[in-house]
Image (cartoon, rainbow, N blue to C red; front, side, top):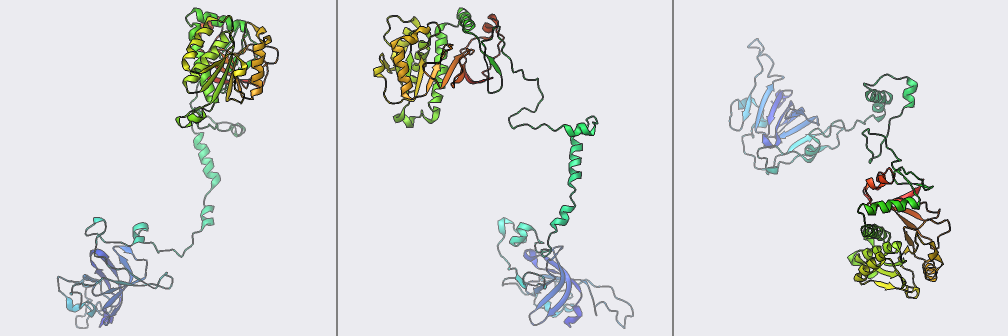
Length: 473
């Protein structure tokens, strides 16, 4: 009788695809040729369902691990308990076939159709019946390996277990002692240091650093690295906080004379000033956003206002470099009877750039230009402001409404005739009057020992640049 096998512990081998199941026989159906196991295990792991049903076509081998009921009961004729028998039935071996229930009678037939395992779910499970089809193909080239469902591959085999139990967030959070954890962290940080008074520890706070700061301890920064024997009356500072003092014009003139005597000639200084000032002007004009090959139809226009002196030669050198960078340059230089040799040399070089040069204000553009560079003023001759050509050029600049860059302006107590938006000083700044102009400093290539020869203790404040902004200290 099939009921004689109920309660027995069996092991059912369904092949490489479905694996091996163990469990207690709960029912045997002769009509449908099925057998059901209670509390089953699949390949050594407990199944998430309480009962699994197998068809006789799926069973490749069936082993009885423990007999119950009449199998394990002692016979009246023997008078002693018999040891549990472990019988094995396979498709290849037919031994002890008579001892099996009728459900295994068809196990010797070949499986031609799809293999199906019927799973009986309990009342608290999500579905009543689940079917796992047998697949003949082997995935990812894993020949001989059992295939698993998508949930098993992603989350493991025990995906449906304990899903009805909600996680206790409040109870789990109550187990976390925040004060104890932070106390342990603080104790780890202060490990190895000397014990301090509690009030001292409360006052001291850990240092915080920006992403661009150096966390390694170094020497303290000396912000006053430039010391002059004679202060010009004003001090400036760089973006990094370095102090840059101003010097009077007499000391500045003596510094340039010593540099020229030691080899830094006027021509070399003019070239350096032209390069640095033109680079600053290109940045003010828009830099790479304005000067591109695709923007040739909107080339910026710059007007140079120059006089017959060294400051004028500096402006002409700047205009030559701007013209080399495809900037529309217009040079205003009146026809003077006498000009310095440096101005004549710079005019000859500028004439090779095919840029425009005018001698009258009437020839300057009436519409606003992009930038005006003022080099009309002179340190040695302040009376130039009284001449007509100077007044007419200053009036044109003030009426054009274009921003003005003034290169190396002289020191004057009077209000400047042309209000500049930017002022470029050379080497060390002069004590310029208080205006709304933004002051910049240009590195003209004077060596450190040249500063030392005139009594200036000098450390370069420029860093990686040749032109830096200065702020009022």
